[in-house]
Image (cartoon, rainbow, N blue to C red; front, side):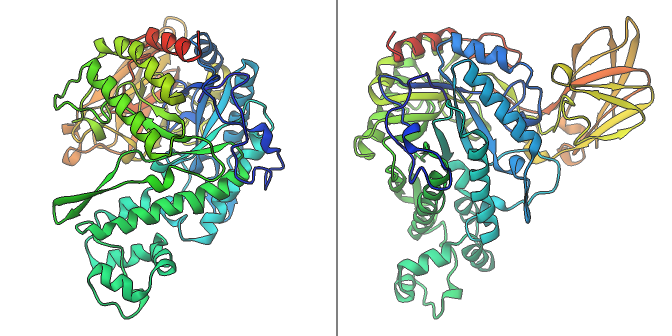
Length: 550
């Protein structure tokens, strides 16, 4: 997120001095007079592998952001990558070193560093507890490790004067709901009631007789109580539990350890069903007023609240959606001002692929006309997709961390210069196993392997690039660094699915960096994946100037 030198006004943290040793007066909320105007920074990578990627371009990008009127940069801090071990607790020293380096760089450029804590996505290669974002709700060792992670991040960056605002997001704490929604078998629902912490919460609030009445089932002991079925209105109990946990189990103790913390609340209501028929909606209003805070955090994309039914929306439609969403949230939060922690001008994510979208040609007009609405209702925003990114599951893609995450055959020499590279000698190869689930495209999408390669002098080198389950493809490399891409059709893989290993082999000396494997590019209409300006770049400069009062 973004911030200027005088961005904050009054203490925001709950028990700010507790466990942090800091004075709460140092941590202040954005104001209309000094809004926070921020953009997320993912470098030349993506949210999953950013912290182990090439960060050598950070200074140039931060400087560009500042010139465009942004006064802060937001960084997503994945729990898993920064604390890969929880039994016992183990921290990733390289990630912390990079974090303090980026925060220090932002400070030197008079940019605030806003942190999204407990981000759920990463591709760290060593084994982690795969269920940590569910077990954290009910398992003491995992929960205590999470609190230690929050404390450790604050210890690392809390002394920097530009670290004044941080957030948790509802998205990273929705696992109990996500797990319970599709659960239909009694045994699974019984397990979830224990593993998610739902049953102990229910027991604190209702008698067994009352629960039996609400479920329409006679229970004789608490161990018989499962999570509610998503096909009945009683599923609202899962939403109530998750909202309670987000506020009281996570936000309040985290805010005591990280002053300036807020929450990106779930804006959209969830449907309640009887069978497949929608019979009501559940509002997450319980998360809209947090102890010790003066504003509410939220997210926005122009398709939200769009009154039209057309797949392609107009500028008036998008402006109506913006005005309606912000005014409604202002009312539902008791008149509190808003901060958009995740602002998307457009979104092509597969999850919202069928939603209305703002055409690229309409983006400049939307940004220009949205300023009065944004100024009236918000204290600023944090742009999610400043630069289009190819979502890739490859760890240490530029070899800036040596060969960590890679299996090596033959002789190779890593270098950390200019963000990292790998000098490969004749008859050498590197390979990496990756999580297919980290690819983000629709099923059946072709997979692209992209890399930057060079060969000594004017010599020619042939690289063999492959993904397990598909024949390798030859790439002829000649001269200085260039980007090479090969595509593997989904039909080439067994069952139409991609394999889980990428391999690069060479018969002659070559240098390789910037390895990506992807089937989806997240668009933002601001800058493309190679840094070229898109439709929204100039409009954001104007928007920032108007919001800053210029």
